[in-house]
Length: 101
Ligand SMILES: [Zn+2]
Image (tube, helix red, strand yellow):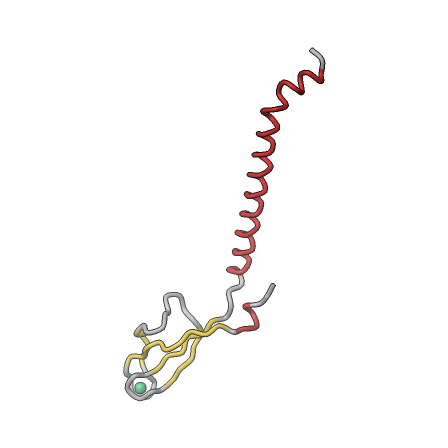
């Protein structure tokens, strides 16, 4: 068998396989790259802060964000002046660390 005819025999089918393989590899590489970028951002999360407000005396308190905080949630922390339970009014992130690319 001549080498050229051998290439012709498998050429038509394997060419498609190679195309698919390259295409899949390209997608996987992009996917892995996006995951890696996403994880890198999660390793250094922006320093978020939660603003707490006392519904009784309107005292405001800002502390660092904790997991599970959301706006409107009633915190288990108490007001320093009247001992009423605080509710979360806002969550902020420091803008300087968000654009850390
Ligand atoms: Zn209060």
